[in-house]
Amino acid sequence: MAGTTSAQRNKRKTPQAIAEMLRVDHAGEYGAVAIYRGQQAVFRRSPATKDMAAQIAQMEAEEQKHLTAFDEMLVERAVRPTALAPIWQAAGYGLGVVTALIGEKAAHACTEAVETVIEQHYAEQIEATKDSEPALSAVFTEFREDELHHKDIALEGGAQDAPAYGLLSRVITAGCKAAIAVTKRI
Image (tube, rainbow, N blue to C red; front, side):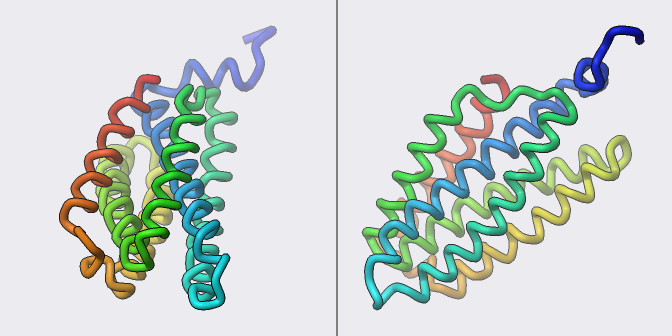
């Protein structure tokens, strides 16, 4: 169409379901980066936890790669990000700090709970997009594999031995699921 930009054309081509997926995934990666930054703020202060800080920095770098990819997809498809980003930033960072202050196993429990929800979320998106958006489905598949790797690291690090693991896991899981539901729309 004459007089329309690429972003305007793409916006009309992005179905609502795909826009919601991208908005939620962008917000989720944004929150994951914030969680890991909060944990690093605690763990990098002590020589005793420098290995944990390094491990978290590596996982954060992978989440940042995902976030950058979703930043680009939002622009390419003219999908607005969530208006709740400042809340997810503060909540993620705070969750990271609190779980790190409890200890390494609690930080791992946080990762395990978040990644369990996220990898299941990606699995649903892979199934929903495999025929209609195979390239997007491939991105979801790649990122899901990274999330599963983070979950494995957390389990190996003693996530399930964290103080009040059951309660901590349930609260974080519920928070993630609520964030997904709200972020689809806002």
